[in-house]
Image (cartoon, rainbow, N blue to C red; front, top):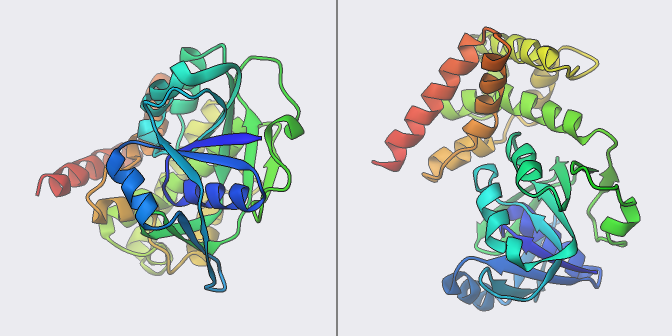
Length: 307
């Protein structure tokens, strides 16, 4: 099975390394000759495991404008780039192509289904932890689970038709209701990420700082209201309790949104809190705290990027 991977960030590099390690054909799709040169200079993907051992995987790579056909495509760009990334290679997809969208947030998945009704589209969400030390040098920060499910209206394939086996240390499971899993991920991200980004703090501060804890509780109450109006029952326990538990478990971590702010990169606020606020507007739900966080993160991101 040959996989093309578009989005060579931490998660994309993990997938490329683990599939290559398991003897599958892997090709990274890169945006520029400079990126190809970086990959060449690093002698492939450098994968550093939890025990600090490093291995180099000499995966293949090509530019977006290449014309080779694509049968299996993993897109793991930032959420705001999902649709443009898919459009950039749409002409290369075979008639029986599978496309997996693996990123934070909600919105792009539904838009992709509308724009490409002929494709076999899958959505995925992961709790794997990783970060890049340098271009194509990925450090594994934690082993989690990746859930995947079909979102297109085409006849579903079997799990074995899509996921190659073995696939290294990736823990991949099929979800019969991937939309619900995506909603749960968005809810947790909405509870934690904007507050950490605005307050320049680790996740644990949301538990130790009473002011931030109170704000997170209000955010969670609004998110639960929006989710319920959309027919989504999130967790077996209140979202606030889940958020507290996750903030405690990841107390020393910096959220991806805060990392984006620090690196002067665009954030995924529109696909997380923005998505929820749009749903709230459609259903006449009152979500002032989430709307405020949405505007504040957008303003902060704009101010930092233009500084």
